[in-house]
Image (cartoon, rainbow, N blue to C red; front, side, top):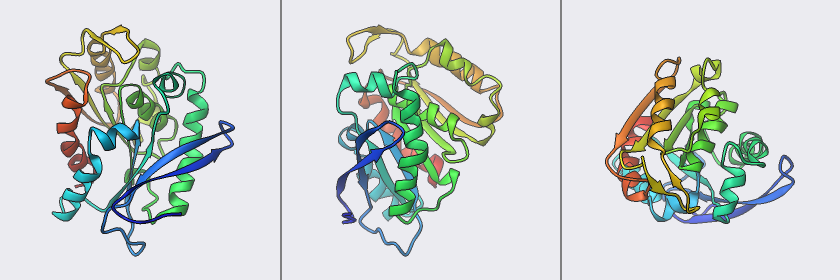
Length: 241
């Protein structure tokens, strides 16, 4: 397995939970050494976090200035827009099995191959849109494994919101949740008209009443990386400063 630091690598992982093989990306900072223990960021829609969010450059900069703790990035890319609907969407037919893959198999792969801290609060799940929904869903299912979540503009509906009401698993979680003020009427990448702002405000109202650490922001902008990218630094400092 290639552990050359400073590069984005891809590896294939066989999943018993899904009976499939998935590609996984990973990035080790230029200073990576097995002599140290690292936090882990797991990004969903990982190719977008690398391409549009340039998250690896931000990690390098913040580690160099010692503004954040040592951190590696592991990512799950999506092979197609249609695929996201079936695996990341909380209502997708493969959603539950894919949550199991991440919570058990992917997490074991990470801890077995990299020098990690192996604690819930050292693991951060990140996602935007449907990938943000998936991050929330996975942490809610495995709160003792994944203690920290970033959800940029997640897709939520009433059924999904109900999962958070009086859910004792939330006591273990620290959630950073954003939504754009221009997301009340926009066209999704599936070509559908959507209002994400209203249901995300409903989710916020529920989470504010629950026993968890919770940061909520309404950002200027829409359902695009131009809105999310500037917030990434704040997210990393919030979780790993």
